[in-house]
Amino acid sequence: MNFKRYLKISISLISLVSLTAQSKTELQLWHGFSGVTAEELNELVKHFNQTEKEFKVVATRKGTYQETMMAGIAAFRAKKQPEMIQIYEVGTATMLAAKEAIIPVSKILSENNLHINYDDFIPVIKGYYSNNNVMLSFPLNSSSPVLYYNKSIFKKAGLDPAKPPKTWEDLFNYAKKIKSTNSAVCGFTTTWPAWIFLENFSSWHNIAYASDNNGMDNNKPKLLFNGNLQVKHWENIQIANKEGYFTYFGRTTEAEMAFTTQKCGIILDSTGSYGEVKESKIDFAVSFLPYYQSAVGAPQNTIIGGASLWVFNGITKEKQKGVAKFLKYLASPEVMAGWHQKSGYLPVTLSSYNLTKSKGFYLTNPGYDVAILELNNKTPTNNSKGLRVIGLPNIRNIVEANFESMLANKITAKQALDDAVTKGNAIILKSGD
Image (cartoon, rainbow, N blue to C red):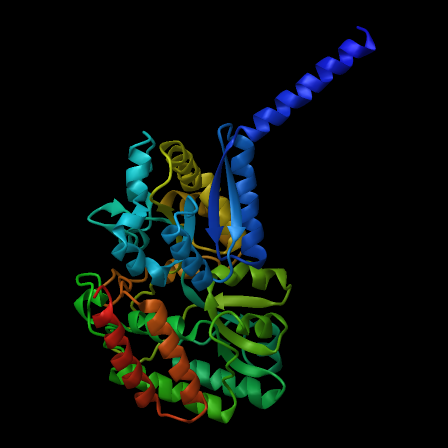
């Protein structure tokens, strides 16, 4: 073969490969991940794109969960929406209220002749993201709060690393001891105070956050999170802060760095942070959330946090087919098990949990299944199935602002919660008007 002909064939082949690569239909996925979880999502997307001939998913971080949600709403109004968007769990009621904006996951799959076994999803997760047995969004990263503790700090404080605190009374005593033996180390801290100290606290103690099955039965429930036990707990946190064995770092994940750099002995945080904590190489363990022994029936069960993938309406049928294929891919036991093991988020299907368990993963990674055990601790009640309250992101902002004012001793715990209930109820009444 002469050189000119060889060159022409080579150019043609390169052009063909380039054309094939460019011919894939792109599907935009907006998300709010960062750090290890963002890297793991990129790997998951990369694997899908390598195995898929027609479609290519492009994952783009749009900031925090709240910033991602706001960007998605603005894009939909401008008719420039992505095909998929990650919405944190407190935005679920908002997405439900905008029915014309979304295509239910079960609908997009069935219309493209693809099947997912919905009964395979962990019941409490399936129930939260479904309406009348119709799955609305895909629970990519479901989480639940757990207690992480530093075993080295425990030993230095004379605490047994094999005996984590079970009750709030235990935790306060442990935190006092950690602080008294090392003034440079905080006793305990938390991420997401509204989620952990109020939303999950209420569920774990089987007390109502809101009326009407926590908003599941009525889109305009009344907030009830200023009950006696919630007030008592906030009073105890205020005392712990005043006496120095609780340290507050911020409203979201700011406290994680304090724990991973061994500046705090105990942290209440999402199971989704397991990957970040493990990467820090500190000697840590995971245990259940504490509870008050005086609370009848406690502990009950936790409720999910994290986020799910929603499909925007107004996208072409061709792109709907690609989205359906991506969701089907995510639901496979192997993919979901791998995501769970690498990210720390829950294995949202029973098959992915059983696959992970059968490979001995939980034996070599103790504590990884604590969040699953918390969610399934007892059959959910009307107080512990989850929250579906419209305007919850704004209500959280009020709760957190009042929490900060309480820690600054500007208001009492009761004033903080009473005010949040009053202002939150006003937001709920105004919604949809």
